[in-house]
Image (tube, rainbow, N blue to C red; front, top):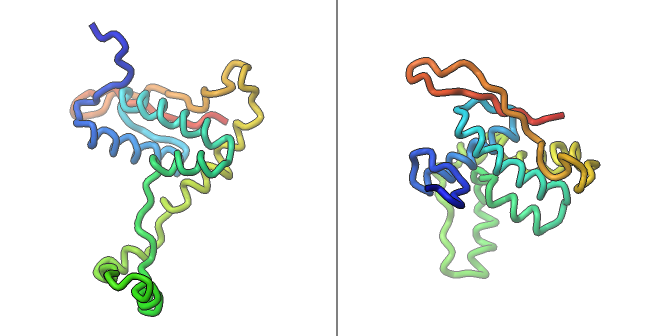
Length: 162
């Protein structure tokens, strides 16, 4: 019996499952739609709706809570002058790796996901009354698709409701 078992395991260890869900939530917020398997869509929906509910109220605490689930790529590396300034305060400071400089300075739309969630997505649902039906939740819709070719896994598209 599976009493009080809330989530699906998705045949993955916890760290891999959480990484998968975080990446899919990021994709959902970036593109406002996500095509995946039904089981994954149901799990992503649960996490995404909790994050949107938090983002409806723009506070520092809520931003920090949501930041735990929205992973950001590394920011551009520091200049020599900034490093020298940092080393003056901390003699043990080490210069950040320069081999990833091109990656760090490239355009990453993922850097804007958090801002988009708080300024574009969450305000759409802000005027819903909390005690009305769909006040907290109901921000997403799952539409079933044809089975995936190859393994016939049931697919679904997860959409943000307008």
